[in-house]
Image (cartoon, rainbow, N blue to C red; front, side, top):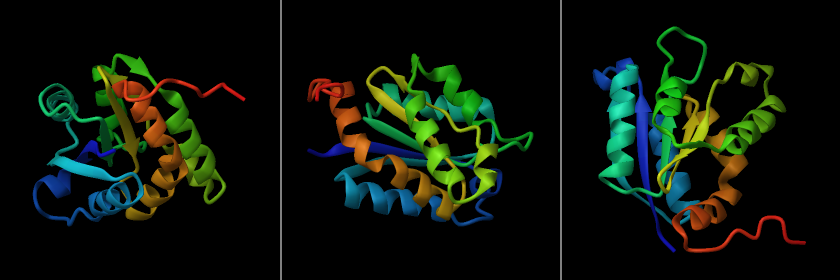
Length: 166
């Protein structure tokens, strides 16, 4: 099964072409290798809530992707607004992904508690915020990768929810 995936990078410097987006490349490689995902949309926007929201809405409503992975804008800095933008566009929260990522990351560094990443659902699209660093992306995505196919299968109606069966 091939999943349609979008990557959204929130970065002021990246949007101006002043920084290479290596975190998105890590996402691309992991998604293609681990869950047979196809990146059908990729975008870099500045750390502006309205621009992040508009990109998320277009990726879900127009491109009809199964999964959006954001990178950047999840920390405590004043311009880190990716979680607020995400919360503004989702229909339902799916906090387990963000909780699992923080839990695994806390085993590596106490700085993981500074993450404000969120995860949720818009329509039948799962949206997950990832950190901005390539290492953080790799660790966080690795923490949830094994659950993504089942979650996407349930959301898209390709499989039933058997998560509580023994």
